Image (cartoon, rainbow, N blue to C red; front, top):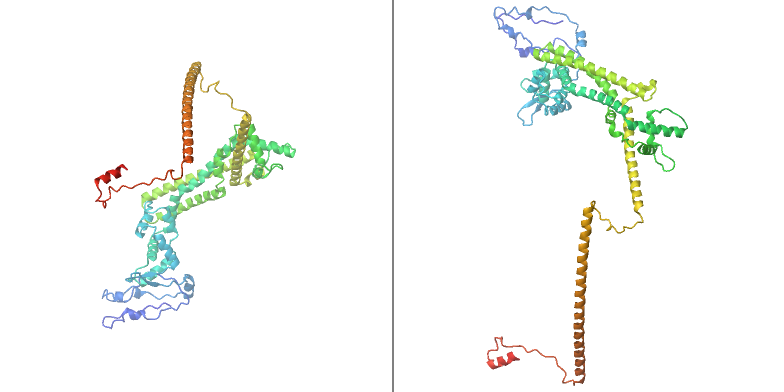
Length: 531
């Protein structure tokens, strides 16, 4: 039973106790479970006692009849399922102020890190309300989508703010409170994210479909692939002793693994040698099927799922727009978003049609390649494209090796043609003379050079002979004189006595320049100088 306080007394009676004393009274109900709160502003009896003297006893709240409620049922229905979040008063680093921290450290740190790459909270709120792409980009929207506050967080932050009005909230709590003030926040962000992401998503779907279409055309028109398949079929029929009309293309991945029993070279090497020899206009195959190589890098199952997600997100965006339009939204912005969603819906329908037709064409292409009809829908586009792309790459590598070997053999044959032969007289046929006049002039110059060389040789021979004769006579005279002088000295030394033999001559030093010899006569100086 809810107890209604008694009506206020008249002015002659003493005023009731202050609100602080009433607040200290025990609650009317005792709850066993924690329930959610209603965030209203409470009206107290003191607020209307002195407002109007004539109607002080006729307040609306004083006329209310008590109502019985099922407290057990209410306690069960409005039980708070959230965990108790402790309210922490954190002192700032500078020690001058405190902040209210409600969130746990992990959540708070994640939001604070995200705020470092986002605009200020006020700018974010304005950008979300007006879908301003210049203030907030796609990455920022995706970041905010991970920060959307839950009802529990919003409730706790508001409770803490009411309980501590003089203490500011922490940066993360203040940001979540700002986001919670935006009407239909999740719908706005998801609609905006779809708008910014649509072009890239459509490109991710359309380009692989175009590559698959081009790849099938390239394979169908490629001559080198036909040469390879025909050669491989002929080799296989010979080895198997059969007359098969074709084979499953999945065997292409095993061709590099089969080797001969003599040289241990792969079957692909022999196929490539035959193709190079019999089909000179063949190519390396890999450079002509670029679209197939690109298709091998795409997961077409994921592509189909992406196309389905695009359709679902477009429908959800319509619902988001309807919800947002109920709140404050400019008519021009509403019309712009509506036109965008209409265009997206049409393009998605076209894209689905293109996807269906290209996949049907791929299945027909598999039938064209000889694949059984019962298995065409089980073959993956990615696996098929990867099979042909890897085989083409192996073929290109093997072809380069075969061409190098052929070039080496050709060079070896050219060297063998001139082996054992000598370079003979090549002056009989001068090189580089293609006309008769040039040849005649060349012969004339040779004759002139030959005659001048002969004349120089004759002069050189005569000069050398005369010089040799004169030199020989002179050398003979010099030799005779030297011999006579030697014999004369030998005879003289033998006939002389030991005393008369020449003694080594002593060198007499001149004392003319000595400063100490001041008493020497001029005659002595003259004598010394003569000696």
